[in-house]
Figure 1: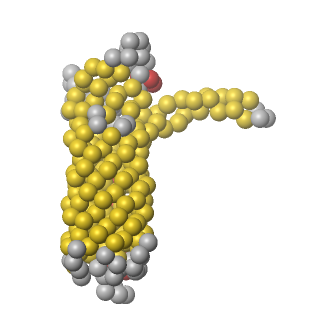
Figure 2: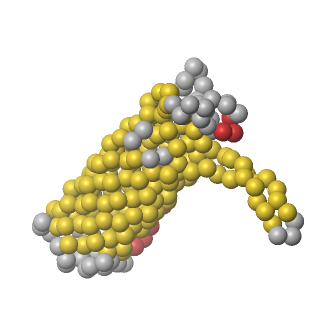
Length: 218
């Protein structure tokens, strides 16, 4: 079973257990916006003409499915797709060369906290979660340029909701969304044992800004 399915099942079981104790409110929010930033370090490949792959800034879209846990807390499952492209950066002259188109899909389970109660029309919130990012990259010359497809990811952010009626509203938010990518090496220095090489996980750090329509029901 894929990690995406496992996360979604955990989300469903959690919501079902909580809903057994009290009536819950549910929200479904289709959204769209933009996702920017993100470099994939490939210096470990040893190519002197490429040091990182740049993820092209582009639009994104997806859907959020949430359920209330308590008055101000909500659990969510988010699917987010960014149709984008990768370009190779040449450190010798600073130029970029188009490599391939790519779909970057994120599947994440979130916890959201509202700063106002469920009866308020205007509800600022903070949100954070974790899950997996899928780098949907077709083969280039018969090979995967990244050497991987799925990586751990997380997000932190906040935004506002405004409800026009009890069952309909709008949501705007901003999130920092890093994804793990390749393995790298750095120097770790201990005051007693000196310095030694240490393996680290590189991150593709992105920011996304989205707006969506809220459909709320019990």
